[in-house]
Length: 413
Image (cartoon, rainbow, N blue to C red):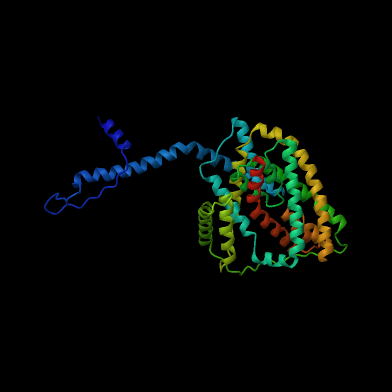
């Protein structure tokens, strides 16, 4: 009988109950209220229901949570190793490879603990916003028209790249377009998940582009445009005395930006609201904050690991068979894109009188970190290279979601 009573308690609904304290003469109660002896079990029942629901949720998701902790523990050293080898986006690729191997062992696609994929995407959005500054756009305005022309030509060639991939390999058009976008590789990968594209294919195509651009352009630039007398054009490092927010308030501000961005993105019905919403909210905060904000490196690593695992755990063999042909074709198309972008950069050099080395390194289809490092080593204007690359990246991130939805809708129509 006691077991049946406990079972009824566990199944009982949650009902808030009002009661009054008994008077000194006895258990007098006011009208519409329960006597104290009957009220205490009701309160205990409410608490029992809350605890039961929490434990049930935790128990139902415990296998997924345990798997996620295990995968993070494996992905961390793998990503660290790839980063130490100077592999582009090593943290993301390490996590993605970890997820792929796990799926191959398990024999089917897997999922992360609920909500962690969104957390990773929001962190990447905030990290992307942290790389922009108002000074970057001000500097870019000096070469506004030629720079916009370079960006439009690069974007048009990338769209052609995506179109040819979709037509000749059978990859879904939105996926091939996002995989061909020049720049902001981790951000595009995170954005692709929400847009319904195949994140694994996008990640592979983006990595291939970054790898080829990072390997080919510095070599060509050093052979064709580097001066005989190399000067190390190192930008001044930020002062160590620059005041910043303490770690905890800084993180709280970023968390607030993420939550407000998600809410605002859904309210405004932005495409890829989970990315663009936090990106815009964080961008406003970074620009308007009287004290400089920053994204702690461990949080960036966490975001890259979560996004990488989300992609890798969706791995399937059909995707691999499709990618074999796509990788070969993408390699050829990226090499052609590099040659055309170098021609466009030389035109930018002739119009603006910016040195050819800086123009080439600033007009590449991605690989921003490698291009800035190359400008420093080869004697180019690293500040202008960063300005050109950042301007292109920001415009691409703002336009890509609408453009991809529009083109995919027309194609489906």
